[in-house]
Image 1 (cartoon, helix red, strand yellow):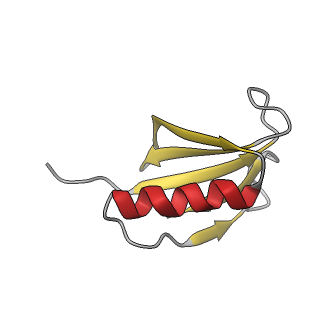
Image 2 (cartoon, one colour):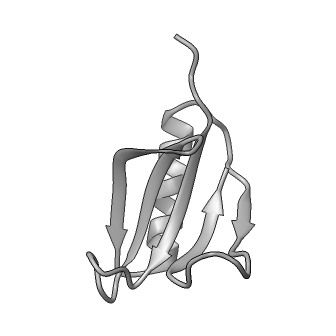
Image 3 (cartoon, helix red, strand yellow):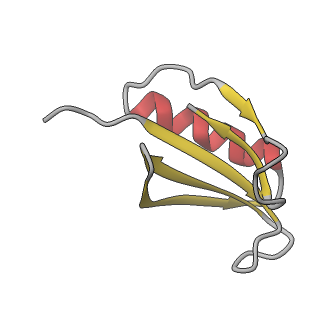
Amino acid sequence: MQQKLSIWTIYENTKDFPGKFVARRFELDQPTRDHFVGASAEAVRDWVQEEAAKMGQGVPYRLPRQPEDDTVILESWV
């Protein structure tokens, strides 16, 4: 089975986790159940790095938030 491209989006202060940072993993444009909630952006970034390594995807590349993105989006990692 071929592995799909994972994209992790990091959010700040979402409605379901107010005051927290959340990473959610997508396979291309499809959401997965994989997520991590942390008190800091750094803790969530560390989780993303660890998950990418576990999945054999190497070191992900950071994509900064774009002006048209929802304001709760901090960044994405591919």
